[in-house]
Image (cartoon, rainbow, N blue to C red; front, side):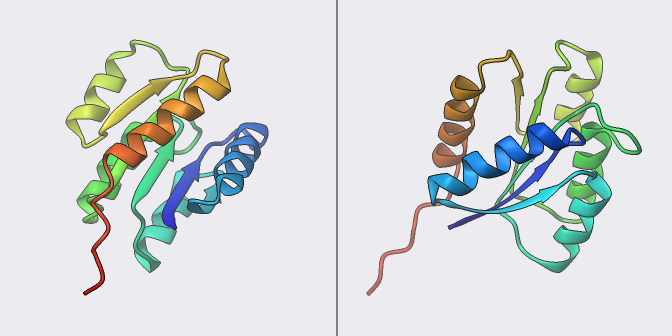
Amino acid sequence: MIPLILVDDDPDMLNLMQITFSDSGHYEVIACQDARDALEVLKQRSVSVIISDFKMPVMTGGQFVKIARDMGYSGLFILYSGRGKDPLIKKAFHDGADFYIPRSGDFNKEFTTLKKIIHDHQPPLKQAD
């Protein structure tokens, strides 16, 4: 199971992502409606992947990635947002985001892309002796 934090201030989108990732059976999903809650989770446990919205109240996804990286988070950080080609997305990459997946309205296609990115960037499983 891959430990995964989902962060989105839209409860419907957060619920959809949580159900979709949980139902796949490959992820241990922690859902947070606020980046501050996700930072608290990072203080308490190891997480392999963060998928975060960008435009959120209180703390943007760009601010979130910078703080998470400054705290020592070294896992995969994916921004998943309808933000577009905003200059702030470019800054988020500079601050430590690994990928940006724009929301286009085709959730199935986007979910497939997210799963592929996660699969392709996970360390290989150690073989038992």
